[in-house]
Image (cartoon, rainbow, N blue to C red; front, side, top):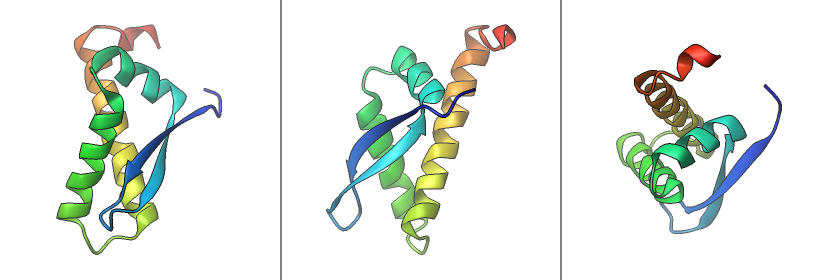
Amino acid sequence: MDDERTIYSIVDECKQPTTITLEKFVADVLQAKLPDVHAWVQAAYDRVADKKPHLGRRQKGDLVRALSWREAIVHLTASGQLDDF
């Protein structure tokens, strides 16, 4: 895989604008599956920030990226497309 990324603008728990970067592959899979990837990323960040307030910004972003990978793999597995890789 290459190093392409997709950047999503979100609002952090302090109501400050920030961004989360996902691998393009993951973003593309989520865009094919979800009606609004931006809203999903924001909701994932909000859940992480709520459940793990002690984590730093980078660690929260890492958890959102892990959740996005999991969501993408679940979609590819359910649709039978994981076998294509």
